[in-house]
View 1 (cartoon, rainbow, N blue to C red):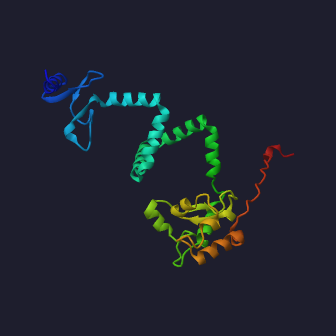
View 2 (cartoon, rainbow, N blue to C red):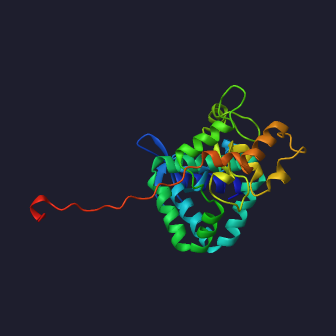
View 3 (cartoon, helix red, strand yellow):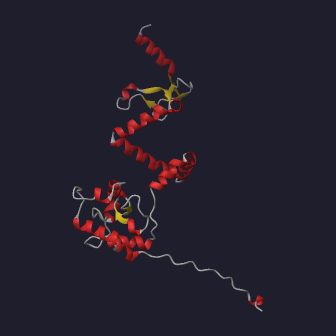
Length: 256
């Protein structure tokens, strides 16, 4: 029996027609499934003529998970190389994660809770790094009003992009940006910034990033930010009112 004859014999053993449907036998679980993409992976997506893999989808997933758990470090290194190889891969992962968490919003909360319990030091460091401003709504609106553009629209303090443009590009409002990364969390260290400027500045100091070498630099906007940080913010800070002490009134029948 030559090579071609062996191929034909093997094909006859693993393929047959059941109820008028062409079916294929999985070489792992020995179950018969319709020979479609619903039950089998393609050998090569770019060349469909090569046909389907010998194992069904479920067996392929189990074997892949087993190999990953046995070689966890190699799998992580391979994923990182694939992720950073092309920007399209990163976008593909981002889109998949959005769909995954949108299907069930509780998934994100459960995974975050499990991660915090398993890696408390990493979670605490992340929380400390990504601190939130202690600013109420009135103060934040005052901050955005201060950095309005010539047309009277809320805009980024760095590049001048309006909040409407920010919604169109990223579906996000202006960010509360820490001018000094490790500085205060109140209004004295906050300006309105678009997503792009907030990401680009990251942990850089204000003068190192926002200077004449930066294509987004504008002298008027720079002066406005400096004036805000030095003194103008003080006009919009709202001091917390002291809490009133509750005094229980005596019922009329207890009054002597």
